[in-house]
Length: 477
Image (cartoon, rainbow, N blue to C red; front, side, top):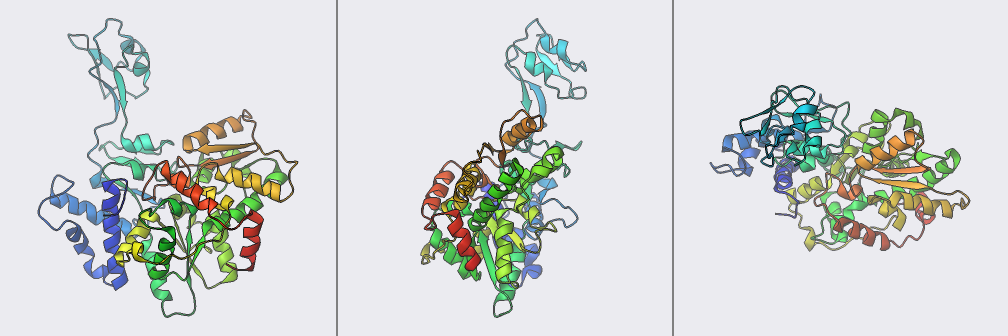
C-alpha cells in the first residue's frame, strides 16, 4: 500500500488501478463486472454492513473511474448508495443543557421549535426547526450544537444540501469543483470523475505511431507528492508509462507571471486567473468583479498552448492536484490545448497498473522553470512571482499591493470587501484550496510539509529569472 492520507483514498486508488490495468490490456469491457470481486474477493465486507453493498458501491466507483455520468456537467458526483452513514445534520441539544429557568433558547426561536421536558431540559422539534441558529447563540452553556455533515462543513460555498431522503446532493449552480467535499467525506460517497482512460488511450495510440507524441505537463506541486521516491524517478516513471516528454507547468506559470504583471500595470487592478475554482467562484458570486479577472490563461493552459504551437500534432495530459482543472480543460477555450487531466492519485494508479516501481528507476532531469514559476504551487507564490516580474520588466514605479487568499473563505472575504471598495489592494491572488495547490483534493498527501517540499523544489531550479525561463521556452522545450 502506498502512502495515502486516508483509507478512503486507498479504496478509490484500488479501483482506478484495476480499471487502468484492464484498459492497458484492452480487456476492460470484458472484465468490468469482475473488478468489485477482485478488490473484495471474500464473503465478508471490510468497510460496509455487508459484502453485497460494498461491491455495489465499488461498481459505482468503476463507473466514475470510466468518466462518470456523461449527462452531468459537474466533475464532482455523489455515490447515492454510499451516502447513508452520517447522522442527520442540524441543531441538537447536547448533554450540556442544565435545564435552566431562563429559557432564552425558547424565547428567540422564531418557529416555536423548542420545548422542555419535566426536568426543564430543552428539545428541538426538527419538523419546525429552520436551522437559523438563534438558540445556539443565546444558550449560556453552549449546549446547542450544529451537527453539520463533513461534506457540508468542507463546502464553504454551501453547494451541498441534504435531500428529503437524507442523502447529500450538489447544487451545480454553486459548485466550483474544488473537491474539498471529495477529500473530507469519511465514507467516500463523493468523488471526482476520472479521465484516466483518455490518458491511457492517448499513450496506447502513440506507440508505434510517428504522427504524434504525448506530453505530460506536471504541476509544480508534484514535488510534494510521491515522497517515497525521488522526483527524478517519478519523471522517469512517466516516460516509462509512455509519455514522450515531461514538461513543467511551472514554465507556464513563468509565462503567466510575465504577462499578468504587464496586464496589471495596464489595468491597475486584477484578480488572478490561475485557479479555475477561484475564477468560477467570482463568476458565480461576484459578477461585478468578473471583468477584472486576468485575461491570461492558467499555467496549465498557457504551457499546453505553447507545446502545441511547437508541435501541432502533440497530445497533452496535465497531471496535478486539482479536480477543478478537469472542468477547466473541457472549456471551449481550453479544449484545443489540453487533451485530458488526471490527478496525482490517478498517476499513482497508472504506475501500479503497469507494475512500475519508481523507487527502482534512474533519475531524469526536470528543469524548465524558474523558482518563481515553481512556487505557484503554494499560496502567496503567484503574488511573489508577479512582484519579481514587475522588477524584471522595469516596472519598479508600480507599487504592488497584493492580497493572497488562502482558501475559498479568505477569497470570499477579500472579494466582498473589494466589491464594496473596502480593500486597498490592486492584485488579489485567489487559491480555493487551503495552502494553495499543495492542498488540492487530488493530492496523495496533504499537510504543512508539502510547502517545504515546494520551496526546496523551487530553490533547486537552475533558471535564475522568469525572463530566462520564458525566453528559453520560446526557443525550445
